[in-house]
Image 1 (tube, rainbow, N blue to C red):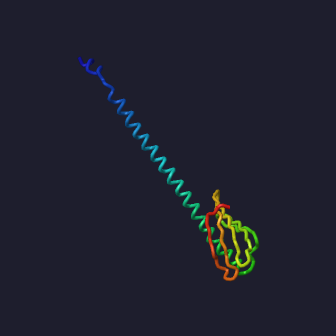
Image 2: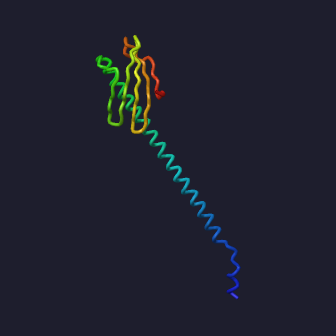
Image 3: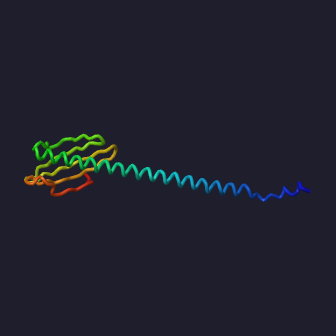
Length: 130
């Protein structure tokens, strides 16, 4: 009589195992996607920070060269984390500086217009298209 008792299984364990496996798999996939998103955010933030640091460094170097009257029409500044290539256009009473800032695989173009008389910036545009 005990033999007939186990013959009428309605398949309770297999569907429960499959459902729990699907839920666990969905949780793992969600966690991997969150990790990937966080990694991309960190890389973008780090690149922006490095670009900003190089931008601030090159502005100091350019102002020093302008004070010493040693600023060439074009040139390159090389820093530890990246490089800056610049071009100077003389527009009479103003100097138009185009800076191309490169860090790893990222690049930004800035344009600054300086007054020749005061040596101070009149206009400053960041992240412009070349």
